[in-house]
Structures are given as C-alpha cells and as structure tokens.
Image (cartoon, rainbow, N blue to C red; front, top):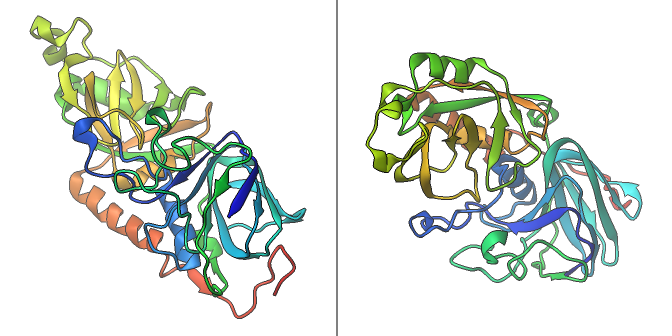
Length: 333
C-alpha cells in the first residue's frame, strides 16, 4: 500500500487507454491527458501498457510507501524528493518501505505522472481504473486523492534500472504548436474565419481542465451556412442541432474555442470546425493558463503518420536506456 499524507491540488488514478467505447452513453474515456509522459513511465518500469498510475496536476502529493517498490516520475518538470533527497525524473527509482515521496509544484508544464512497478490495483469500473471525478467512478472511491487514503499497488520483483535518453525528454515551454484536422462543421466558417483561427496565437485560460481547454483569441467569421440556417439550429451562428463531439474536438461556443479532451462531453449544440490530431493532445495537456498555442492544419494522412510516430515514442523502445548501475535518490545502488 501507499499511504496518502497530503493529496496535492488534484491527483487522480488513471490508466491507458481509459474507459473506451462508452461515449455514446455520455461517459468519456478519461485516462492520462498527457498519454506520452504516462506511457513512457510505464515503459521505463516494464509495466503493462494498461497499468494504472497517478496523474498529478500542478501541486503534487506527499506519499509514504508501506512496501518497497520502484517508481518513475515523468511529465511536467517538478521538484520532487524522496526522504528529502532530490528525486530524478524520467528514470526508474527504487523506494524502500517507509520512505516518503514528496512531489512539489510543477515549474514547466502542468501535469506530472507517477508510475509504479506493477501498477495501482484499485477496483476497475466499466473496464478501467481511470478516475472520472464528475461521475464519481474509477480510481479510489471515484475521486481525487485525499489525505489518509490507501492506494493498493502490486508487489513485484526487481526492476532493471532504466532512464529516458535526454534528447527524448519533452520540453514543456511557453509556446506550443498543435496540429488540427478539419472537423465535421468546417464549412460553418468562411475562408477568412479559418485563416484567423490558424494565424492567431490563442491564450489558454486558467479555467481550463480535463473537461475543456478554454481559449481566448480573435473573433472568427461565420459562413452563410451558420448565418442562414433553420431556426431549430439555435440563434447563435455557432449553434447547431444537438450533435456528437469527437474526442479532441475544437468546440466553438460563440467565437470562443473550447477543446474537448479526455473528460470532455460527447455531445451538445455547438459546432466543431476542427479536431486536435491524436498525436498532439499530449502537448495540449501541458499548456498552463496564460500561455499560448498556435494551430497548424494538416491532412488526415499526415495525422495518421504523426500518430504512428507518437505511438513509437510512447513505447519507448528507441529511447529507453538500460544501465548496469543507477544511483537512486534513496541512496540505493
């Protein structure tokens, strides 16, 4: 077991690929928002792809390990310590029974991930251990970690020490380029509207979360399709008869784009002129409020190719480095 001394701002149990196949009944997939960082953490430990770990938002938890284990901390750059000694990121670290891991505040990026050898063994709900807080399902009691919780983990044997090659470590900076493909309502914007969307820097608001990434930028110009439509579509040009939303859809509410990520709704009455390419979603997960993104339009063939590259990077086969001896933050060799 892992004992939660302090929970952090919002720390949840997640697994990959989450709770798939249920969007038609309004249940999102959940799972790690930044799946690349999360999946590399599991790869470092030799875990199954589906092993559950922790997603840590901005301010991390303080955890006491009641049994020995091996962990990997990935994602947003954060100050973390094990019994007061610095904990390195993007590599395996041995933890002895009784040691206390403290994960501090993220300084670059916003979401860190703690994966644990063998994974977290909470009770699956609808085929996944991922936490969907708004519905109170998955994770530990369907909610974010709280002080006093016990996190069940697997008991495993020794894990070969590994690290991620430094050139493969992501850089979570102030500016992020996000690839998009045309969505189901692309013809509801004029060519000038599309150009404005792609040319502008968009600022991520502090109200963004796993349900929606809210953006501020220029006004967009709507086409005749949006301006002259049957009244049952709603009065605003961005309104449409209730429609399904794709995962990663760029929802246009008025002229304010809201990207719908892993906990986002599956249907509603706003248009979706663009969809985030699958290989770019992990980058969006690390953009802090007040920072900016730009969108680049790509075709579906390019999106598929980039997704293949992303999948290879998540598997880590080309970037994980085995070492014969790796000094850990606990002082063990």
